[in-house]
Image (cartoon, rainbow, N blue to C red; front, side, top):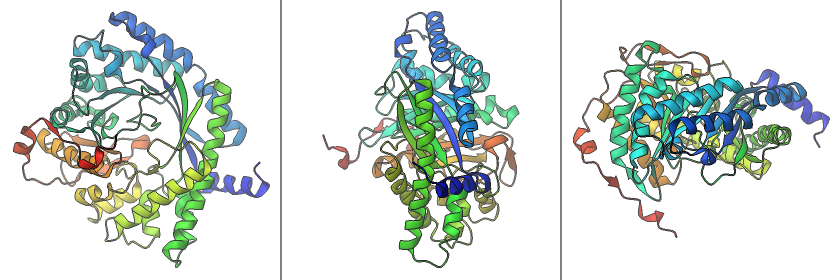
Amino acid sequence: MINLFEVNETNKMIQQENLDVRTITIGISLIDCIDANIDVLCRNIYKKITSVAADLVKTGEDIEKKYGIPIVNKRISVTPIGLIGAAACQTTDDFVKIAKTLDQCARQVGVNFIGGYSAIVSKGMTKAEKLLIQSIPQAMKETELVCSSVNVGSTKTGINMDAVKLIGEIIKETASLTKEQDSIGCAKFVVFCNAPDDNPFMAGAFHGVSETDAIINVGVSGPGVVRKAIQSAKGKDFGELCEIVKKTAFKITRVGQLVAREASASLNIPFGIIDLSLAPTPAIGDSIADCLTEMGLERVGAPGTTAALAILNDQVKKGGVMASSYVGGLSGAFIPVSEDQGMIDAVEAGALTLEKLEAMTCVCSVGLDMIAIPGKTSAKTIAGIIADEMAIGMINQKTTAVRIIPVIGKDVGEKVEFGGLLGYAPIMPVNPFSCDEFIDRGGRIPAPIHSFKN
């Protein structure tokens, strides 16, 4: 039971410190939809999703009213379409047809996004998975609510550099096809190493093949709450600081646990995981960067930034696992640039560079996220940035990801406006020296020696 003090404390976190449940995500298996006929497959997909997720939005709204807890997004993730479409899809157009079906499903049930237009190719690509990857630019252009991801590496398998090279080209093509909207198609696509299959956060959410038929995953976020807690630790040593952050993360996760249990009971769908990820928004006071500067940094990017982020990420996870037996997904701290006003300010002040962000991804919960770069950046340079980030994940046995946007027609010194939760971003400079010969080698980077634990 929750006592009156805890109720008042939670209300304060919601009203004054931007605490919210960022998403309730239904994961839906589409394995039983598989058919060799593309039209039958699309009908099966539409029927399955619209029936299973029919009451998701209403359930979320009912929970909001009952407890006064904001639930920002209601989302769906599905089994990777690279698997589901393998029997029916002979062309990229066939895969785009599935993407349009997913978009129709999302609109019908009223969710914000649907994820799972995905392929898992960390060791190699099937013909169907390659077709799906090649279809991503057109799919992102012709849909609004569909999110896409590709897993190109893992600690167990190494990095599929053929896929990395291809995705560099795909990102450039996606940017070009959506250039009228400032290349926003790239904001709906992410490339992973060690992708978790229970992730409720877009753009990387998909329903793993090891999951049950349907599952409820909840993502909670509260950078403003954590920032307030860090403020209360001013002048205290690191031991006391860590204890305060950990206890705060515990309280935030309990809110998510409550929502998850309610949603699971209402929808009669099993509860999966709580993802406690401090995901910022462009709102003032809802920033990961502000949490780090409250620890004593003048700006994010200053010496000590990676250490501060490591503290934050670790204590958030420690607090989360004490509050719920099923913490998963990407739990920790996100460091997207465009979605975090403090990050944007640091870039504009010259304190934060792409190279410093890469160093920070060694200790954050995901990777290089929502970074705008010059539209003239080559596909192979983008592939090199992806390869670097995948290597960090592979060697360190952690999830890493890249969501990067080469904004066609814009260069360093300009800004790009995405709107909503995606915010806006300054165009960041990219190292001008070539990695073309390295990327052209192709093949697979072998798994590191510590991967052999069978």
